[in-house]
Length: 400
Image 1: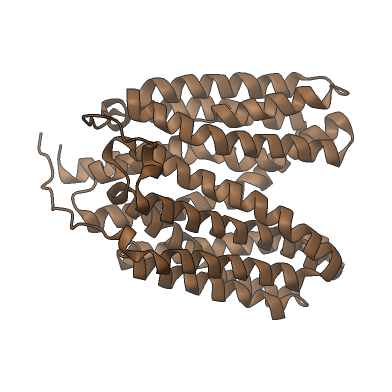
Image 2: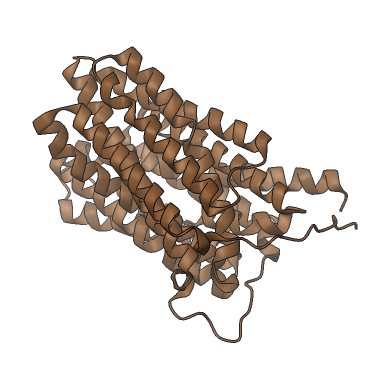
């Protein structure tokens, strides 16, 4: 295969993976409004979305481990089929259905969600000729994912408004099935084989000190994300501009998109633990600017745009380190653990920042978010040796 053909094939693979991950960003708000429609209760809807988030956090590493043992194709196709079937069932559940049924179905969806993100990140080193190209690919992937977070929630709400909330859920299930199947059909995915080891590492990917460092740091960064979302909602509510919360969070995502594009052109992000600590420290400082900006929508927008530019570079740097610090036979599971860390951290951050915002306002919630960023910085800065990376050899492109 020529270099250009290989590049086009890689671009197709990444594009398909982005499409397959779009429903994940649709389901958070999609399940919320659908459950509210069926039960008439925001409390019940919150339980449903919480069950989905918990299921996703638990299921990701389990499915990633299964991929590491048996390859990508079967796991992706089976999980996509189960996810689509459960979402279709949710879409057809009648109004007034028991909350317990909705919670169980949502948890099942989370547990079965195909680990496409972890799979494509496991493929990047094999599709990249050298370490620089791999880092750029991770940065591009982290950047492109921001597009799904910007477009997914509005798309779910639009489909729900034009048709019905059940239709939006069913559409998400269809996209999961079709796009995951397309990704699994790609030769790179079909041809991926798990690395073998004399004996699987006890404890899986988390046995590696570097993985524990990354997971702890990403959990704290997830706390930052969840607290900022609560803070923005609280601030706009206090300013009687609640409808501005969505656009402000969109600006935040736009900042990440810009930062990711810059990181891609600059080489893909940090290469060392010290470099990652510097990026995460800047992430924390950037979000600290939200504290004095909480009284103005314009000021919050400017602060979110600036702070957001550090999100994709931080994520890309962490992803680029996984392939080096995790045991080779657990790489897919390792990538899934980072996604779980972000999800769990985000849920915890939202839960902790909620009471702060209710009692004291948005600024303390933003300060709490920045504190979580400082904690992430400390985790990386105190354990830089665990993230030391060996130099990766340059591989010549494979010719047909």
